[in-house]
Image (spheres, rainbow, N blue to C red):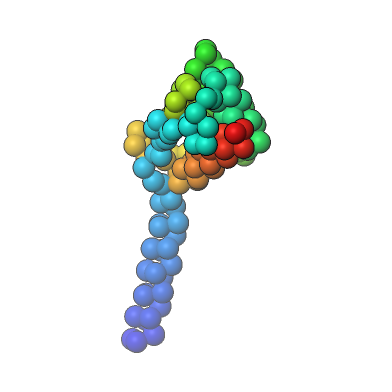
Length: 133
């Protein structure tokens, strides 16, 4: 009987791990009004746009200026797609969720990899802004 209990415990543990592995979602991460003025105070809108577009391109994002002060970024990875709006001006920029496919978005939560992609994009934009000074 002891062996049966051990086997049942192992089966339950494995089942729990499988369920938890499939639950890799997190609250959608947005960047809201990140400051542009990191090392110099006279960035132009063109400087900020260039920092955003170059950062995105380096990370595999397709960056498209929709209108002055607004960039649409789209990332395709395997069968996943993430899309963000990036409003910007000479003082700040934001990265906001717009759309996705195959990322389990439910209106609040999304596959946790998405948040990493947004943090990487934010870090690359910040790096570009610092290096422009």
